[in-house]
Structures are given as structure tokens and as C-alpha cells.
Image 1 (tube, one colour):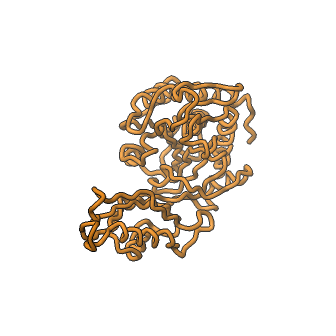
Image 2 (cartoon, helix red, strand yellow; image 1 turned 90 degrees about the horizontal axis):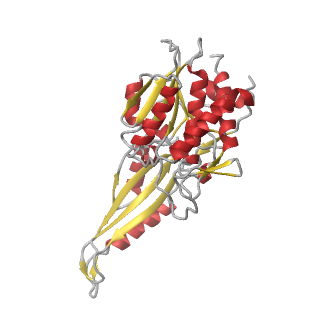
Image 3 (cartoon, helix red, strand yellow; image 1 turned 180 degrees about the horizontal axis):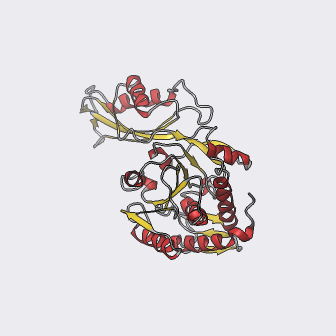
Length: 361
């Protein structure tokens, strides 16, 4: 089905207006009260019965029918704090050249969020859909927080598959890397720096850091590549004349689907002498099979697919999910973040076509 501009114009206009309101309303992670109210009021004005859990807003399609597959449409309304270097007010929705909308969260993930909301409204009152729809505008995505999608999922009931709205240029991210943050500590023996005393924990840590730098796990994903291991922080010593007995460092691990995080942790611990401790194992790699109806629908529209190196709320979903949305991930978390209005309009049209392609379920 071809979705004409006239069919999506009203949806797009209202979605863009909502996005401008969201940009003008600060919504840092854990501080999303005001944007949650905005989204809920917007949906209620459209005649949608909404529910709220913490700062998460959700709704079901009007003609919900038990027994049908459940499709979740999810994106987030929290933002990071403004990066250094903004040349504009990050909370002022500046429209330039009639197409370029600047503002914090415009691209990540305001554009995908409002496009999914418009898509939900398009299908909301339709009868005899082959699926049930849940729309969820969630909090704390930027910090993988406990009060975002993780807290909401138990409220929603069984879900069969999901679309996660993130800026992907409307290409299909059928897999994404997971994340594990590890705290490491090398333990030495304190001593006076002027004498041959002690065991310098910094030198012990450097040996392990070099090991991690050169460590390559053998299973390589055709979509996501190898597991990426990066030491990103290091801390040791309290004064210049004391050999430190402890050196702490942080390891950022981006996992592929070939390894659960627990297995990667065990392999890293065996490779080093420092004591390692994972902050969490829950953010594993995630994705959706190529033969899933949602992916097949997208392929039928000519959409390309890829593996994403960035993390999203997909990592917390125990069901197949496709990450796709208007905007460009390269703009996320940058100064003078923006999205094109044309990208939002195109995104709405493609989202609608993507769901229309599921009518053969």
C-alpha cells in the first residue's frame, strides 16, 4: 500500500508540533515528569485511553482482540544533558531553512518517538487488525535505568515482537551490540617510592590492560563483528612518594550475539590477574531473525538492514525487536542536534507501510 503525502500530512504536522513541545521541555533521565505529562495529554486529546507507570506512558489500540499477536511500538522521551559547544539554545525548537529542526532530543529520540506515536494513531481505531498494538513512550533509556522499559514491561503483559524507535535513517537494525561495564582492581603492596619497596599496583594493572587491549574473542558475528573491549578509566595513588597498593580501572565491553555477557566476563577474568566485577549482566546483544515477518515486510519495501554498535532499550526486551527510525545516529548526543522534518514525514509513511505489510500474518 502506498501512503500518500495527504494521508500522512495531518499526522506529521501534529507529530512535529508535539516534538517542538518536547524539545522545549527538559527531560533528562530520571527527570521526565513534564514530558510524560505532555505525551499523555497529547494522546488523550486524540481520544486515546492512556495509562501511566512512573514516567512511562502507554496505550493499547481501540479494538484489542485477545489471541492476536502483540506488537510493541516503543521509543523514549528522556535525553542526555547538552554537550559542550551548542551554538543555539538546546531547549528552543529552532526551525531553520523550513526543514531543519534543532533542539536537544530532536534526533535521539524525539523524531522516532513522535513518528511512532503518529503511526499508532493511524492504526488506533482500525478494526480487524491482524495484530494488537501497544504504544510505550518510556523513560530512562539513556541510562538503561530501572524505572524505564524494564519497569514497564511487567505491566504490559505478553508481547510477541517490537519496533524500537531510534535514529537509523529508516534502515533496519536487526541486531545490536550489548553492553557490560566491568570494574577491575589490581592489588599490590604499598612502599616508599625512594626505596626498592612494595609492589606497584599501577604496573600490575598496566600488564592486565595490555592483555585486554590485545585480547580478541574468537567468535565473530557476521553483523556485529567481534566483541569490543575497551579500558576507559583508570585511577591509582594518593601521593607522589608512595608506591600504590591498588589500581582501579573500568572496562567497557560491547558484546555480540555469539556470547552472553556472563561468558565474556569469565573469559576476561581468566585472562587477567586483577580482580574483576561486572556492574550488570543484563544488557546482552539483541535482535530479530531475518525471516521474521517484520523484517520481511521491511525488505519488501526495499529497506536495508545492518547491525548496530549502539545500545538501546532492545537490550531489555526478551522478545524479537527491530530498531528503526528517522534521523541519524551520528547526530545523537552532539551539540546542535537536529532532525529534518522530511525525515519525520518519511518515517511515518514507512512505519505505516511496515505495519501494513504484516496484514498477511
